[in-house]
Length: 237
Image 1 (cartoon, rainbow, N blue to C red):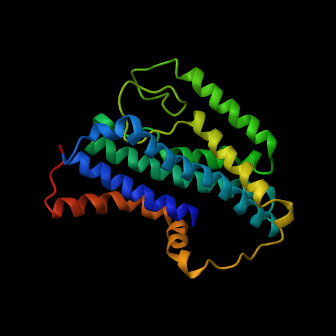
Image 2: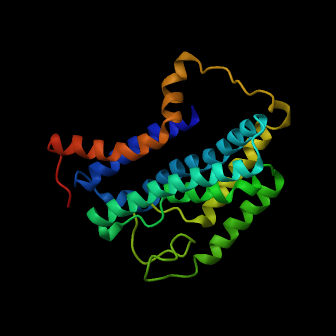
Protein backbone atom coordinates (compact mmCIF):
# COMPACT_ATOMS: atom_id res chain seq x y z
CA UNK A 1 0.00 0.00 0.00
CA UNK A 2 2.78 2.42 0.90
CA UNK A 3 4.53 1.74 -2.38
CA UNK A 4 1.19 2.22 -4.18
CA UNK A 5 0.86 5.67 -2.60
CA UNK A 6 4.39 6.45 -3.78
CA UNK A 7 3.46 5.30 -7.31
CA UNK A 8 0.45 7.64 -7.40
CA UNK A 9 2.59 10.53 -6.15
CA UNK A 10 5.26 9.74 -8.77
CA UNK A 11 2.77 9.70 -11.65
CA UNK A 12 1.22 13.01 -10.57
CA UNK A 13 4.65 14.57 -10.13
CA UNK A 14 5.85 13.43 -13.56
CA UNK A 15 2.60 14.58 -15.15
CA UNK A 16 3.16 18.03 -13.68
CA UNK A 17 6.77 17.97 -14.92
CA UNK A 18 5.59 17.00 -18.41
CA UNK A 19 3.18 19.94 -18.46
CA UNK A 20 6.06 22.23 -17.57
CA UNK A 21 8.35 20.60 -20.14
CA UNK A 22 5.76 21.26 -22.83
CA UNK A 23 5.91 24.93 -21.88
CA UNK A 24 2.65 25.30 -19.95
CA UNK A 25 4.59 26.75 -17.01
CA UNK A 26 8.19 27.14 -15.93
CA UNK A 27 10.15 23.89 -15.77
CA UNK A 28 12.63 25.59 -13.45
CA UNK A 29 10.13 25.00 -10.62
CA UNK A 30 11.18 21.33 -10.58
CA UNK A 31 14.91 22.01 -10.59
CA UNK A 32 15.22 23.84 -7.30
CA UNK A 33 13.36 24.60 -4.10
CA UNK A 34 10.02 23.00 -3.29
CA UNK A 35 9.58 21.32 -6.67
CA UNK A 36 12.95 19.59 -6.50
CA UNK A 37 12.53 18.54 -2.86
CA UNK A 38 9.08 17.07 -3.59
CA UNK A 39 10.61 14.84 -6.24
CA UNK A 40 13.35 13.81 -3.85
CA UNK A 41 10.83 12.95 -1.14
CA UNK A 42 8.92 10.68 -3.54
CA UNK A 43 12.12 9.02 -4.73
CA UNK A 44 13.35 8.58 -1.15
CA UNK A 45 10.16 6.73 -0.26
CA UNK A 46 10.75 4.25 -3.10
CA UNK A 47 14.37 3.71 -2.05
CA UNK A 48 13.49 3.25 1.63
CA UNK A 49 10.71 0.78 0.77
CA UNK A 50 13.09 -1.12 -1.50
CA UNK A 51 15.32 -1.79 1.50
CA UNK A 52 12.37 -2.73 3.71
CA UNK A 53 11.00 -5.08 1.05
CA UNK A 54 14.36 -6.82 0.79
CA UNK A 55 14.03 -7.96 4.40
CA UNK A 56 10.57 -9.41 3.73
CA UNK A 57 11.79 -11.24 0.65
CA UNK A 58 14.87 -12.49 2.47
CA UNK A 59 12.95 -13.81 5.48
CA UNK A 60 10.44 -15.55 3.22
CA UNK A 61 13.28 -17.24 1.34
CA UNK A 62 15.02 -18.28 4.57
CA UNK A 63 11.73 -19.69 5.88
CA UNK A 64 11.61 -21.88 2.77
CA UNK A 65 15.16 -23.05 3.56
CA UNK A 66 16.83 -21.56 0.49
CA UNK A 67 20.60 -21.98 0.55
CA UNK A 68 22.85 -18.95 1.03
CA UNK A 69 24.41 -19.56 -2.36
CA UNK A 70 21.03 -19.63 -4.10
CA UNK A 71 19.94 -16.51 -2.23
CA UNK A 72 23.00 -14.60 -3.37
CA UNK A 73 22.42 -15.46 -7.01
CA UNK A 74 18.72 -14.68 -6.62
CA UNK A 75 19.42 -11.13 -5.48
CA UNK A 76 22.31 -10.70 -7.88
CA UNK A 77 20.04 -11.63 -10.78
CA UNK A 78 17.21 -9.39 -9.56
CA UNK A 79 19.52 -6.45 -9.05
CA UNK A 80 21.13 -6.94 -12.46
CA UNK A 81 17.71 -7.07 -14.13
CA UNK A 82 16.55 -3.81 -12.55
CA UNK A 83 19.90 -2.17 -13.33
CA UNK A 84 19.49 -3.21 -16.98
CA UNK A 85 16.14 -1.40 -17.08
CA UNK A 86 17.98 1.66 -15.81
CA UNK A 87 20.50 1.31 -18.64
CA UNK A 88 17.60 1.13 -21.10
CA UNK A 89 16.37 4.46 -19.74
CA UNK A 90 19.91 5.84 -20.08
CA UNK A 91 19.90 4.84 -23.74
CA UNK A 92 16.45 6.33 -24.41
CA UNK A 93 17.30 9.65 -22.75
CA UNK A 94 20.65 9.73 -24.59
CA UNK A 95 18.67 9.54 -27.87
CA UNK A 96 15.85 11.97 -27.06
CA UNK A 97 17.22 14.36 -24.40
CA UNK A 98 21.03 14.06 -24.59
CA UNK A 99 21.61 17.29 -22.67
CA UNK A 100 19.68 15.90 -19.67
CA UNK A 101 20.56 12.21 -20.06
CA UNK A 102 19.95 9.97 -17.04
CA UNK A 103 23.34 8.47 -16.22
CA UNK A 104 22.51 6.98 -12.82
CA UNK A 105 18.85 7.18 -11.90
CA UNK A 106 16.63 5.47 -9.35
CA UNK A 107 16.53 2.13 -11.21
CA UNK A 108 20.33 2.04 -11.47
CA UNK A 109 20.53 2.72 -7.74
CA UNK A 110 17.93 0.15 -6.68
CA UNK A 111 19.46 -2.50 -8.93
CA UNK A 112 22.97 -2.02 -7.54
CA UNK A 113 21.63 -1.66 -3.98
CA UNK A 114 19.86 -5.03 -4.12
CA UNK A 115 23.23 -6.63 -4.80
CA UNK A 116 25.22 -4.53 -2.32
CA UNK A 117 22.67 -4.92 0.48
CA UNK A 118 22.77 -8.73 0.56
CA UNK A 119 25.47 -8.98 3.29
CA UNK A 120 23.50 -6.56 5.49
CA UNK A 121 20.01 -8.10 5.32
CA UNK A 122 20.13 -9.52 8.86
CA UNK A 123 21.68 -6.46 10.54
CA UNK A 124 19.92 -3.79 12.56
CA UNK A 125 21.79 -1.01 14.38
CA UNK A 126 24.93 -1.53 12.31
CA UNK A 127 22.88 -0.59 9.25
CA UNK A 128 22.02 2.72 10.91
CA UNK A 129 25.71 3.41 11.49
CA UNK A 130 26.56 2.47 7.91
CA UNK A 131 23.75 4.70 6.65
CA UNK A 132 25.14 7.67 8.57
CA UNK A 133 28.55 6.87 7.08
CA UNK A 134 27.09 6.88 3.54
CA UNK A 135 25.50 10.27 4.12
CA UNK A 136 28.67 11.72 5.64
CA UNK A 137 30.80 10.41 2.78
CA UNK A 138 28.39 11.95 0.26
CA UNK A 139 28.98 15.37 1.82
CA UNK A 140 32.69 14.90 1.18
CA UNK A 141 32.09 13.81 -2.43
CA UNK A 142 30.02 16.93 -3.07
CA UNK A 143 33.17 18.99 -2.76
CA UNK A 144 34.32 17.49 -6.07
CA UNK A 145 33.07 18.09 -9.58
CA UNK A 146 33.69 16.49 -12.95
CA UNK A 147 33.10 17.44 -16.57
CA UNK A 148 32.27 13.83 -17.54
CA UNK A 149 29.60 11.36 -16.29
CA UNK A 150 31.77 8.37 -15.43
CA UNK A 151 31.85 9.00 -11.68
CA UNK A 152 28.20 10.02 -11.41
CA UNK A 153 27.27 6.65 -9.90
CA UNK A 154 29.52 7.36 -6.93
CA UNK A 155 28.18 10.81 -6.09
CA UNK A 156 30.62 13.09 -7.91
CA UNK A 157 28.08 14.84 -10.06
CA UNK A 158 29.05 15.90 -13.57
CA UNK A 159 28.55 19.48 -14.66
CA UNK A 160 25.20 18.96 -16.40
CA UNK A 161 21.60 18.49 -15.32
CA UNK A 162 20.08 14.99 -15.24
CA UNK A 163 16.34 14.30 -15.28
CA UNK A 164 16.87 11.63 -12.61
CA UNK A 165 19.93 11.33 -10.38
CA UNK A 166 20.35 9.03 -7.36
CA UNK A 167 24.03 8.16 -6.73
CA UNK A 168 25.12 5.40 -4.37
CA UNK A 169 26.25 7.98 -1.82
CA UNK A 170 24.14 8.96 0.07
CA UNK A 171 21.18 6.96 -1.22
CA UNK A 172 22.47 3.46 -0.50
CA UNK A 173 22.32 4.67 3.10
CA UNK A 174 18.54 5.10 2.72
CA UNK A 175 18.30 1.49 1.49
CA UNK A 176 20.14 0.37 4.62
CA UNK A 177 17.71 2.37 6.77
CA UNK A 178 14.90 0.50 5.05
CA UNK A 179 16.62 -2.80 5.84
CA UNK A 180 16.93 -1.70 9.47
CA UNK A 181 13.23 -0.77 9.60
CA UNK A 182 12.22 -4.06 8.01
CA UNK A 183 14.22 -6.08 10.54
CA UNK A 184 12.72 -4.11 13.42
CA UNK A 185 9.12 -4.25 12.19
CA UNK A 186 9.20 -7.78 10.81
CA UNK A 187 11.91 -9.40 12.88
CA UNK A 188 12.07 -12.53 14.97
CA UNK A 189 8.65 -12.12 16.54
CA UNK A 190 7.01 -12.29 13.11
CA UNK A 191 9.28 -14.56 11.14
CA UNK A 192 6.71 -17.37 11.21
CA UNK A 193 4.07 -15.19 9.54
CA UNK A 194 4.76 -16.44 6.02
CA UNK A 195 1.12 -16.04 4.89
CA UNK A 196 0.09 -12.40 5.44
CA UNK A 197 -3.57 -11.45 5.44
CA UNK A 198 -4.97 -10.09 2.16
CA UNK A 199 -5.30 -6.31 1.92
CA UNK A 200 -8.58 -4.66 2.85
CA UNK A 201 -10.87 -3.90 -0.13
CA UNK A 202 -10.38 -0.14 0.24
CA UNK A 203 -6.61 -0.37 -0.24
CA UNK A 204 -6.48 -3.12 -2.87
CA UNK A 205 -5.94 -0.66 -5.76
CA UNK A 206 -2.95 0.85 -3.95
CA UNK A 207 -1.64 -2.60 -3.06
CA UNK A 208 -1.98 -3.63 -6.72
CA UNK A 209 0.00 -0.58 -7.85
CA UNK A 210 2.61 -1.31 -5.18
CA UNK A 211 3.06 -4.88 -6.38
CA UNK A 212 3.48 -3.70 -9.99
CA UNK A 213 5.46 -0.52 -9.40
CA UNK A 214 8.28 -1.45 -11.81
CA UNK A 215 6.15 -1.87 -14.96
CA UNK A 216 4.19 1.25 -14.01
CA UNK A 217 7.47 3.16 -13.68
CA UNK A 218 8.66 1.96 -17.08
CA UNK A 219 5.49 2.74 -19.06
CA UNK A 220 3.82 5.69 -17.37
CA UNK A 221 5.95 8.44 -18.90
CA UNK A 222 5.51 7.34 -22.55
CA UNK A 223 1.75 7.07 -21.90
CA UNK A 224 1.57 10.52 -20.28
CA UNK A 225 3.58 12.11 -23.09
CA UNK A 226 1.46 10.41 -25.75
CA UNK A 227 -1.74 11.66 -24.10
CA UNK A 228 -0.45 15.23 -23.90
CA UNK A 229 0.68 15.16 -27.54
CA UNK A 230 -2.67 13.76 -28.70
CA UNK A 231 -4.47 16.45 -26.71
CA UNK A 232 -2.32 19.10 -28.37
CA UNK A 233 -0.91 20.32 -25.08
CA UNK A 234 2.33 21.31 -26.77
CA UNK A 235 5.43 19.98 -28.36
CA UNK A 236 8.75 18.88 -26.92
CA UNK A 237 11.20 21.85 -26.97
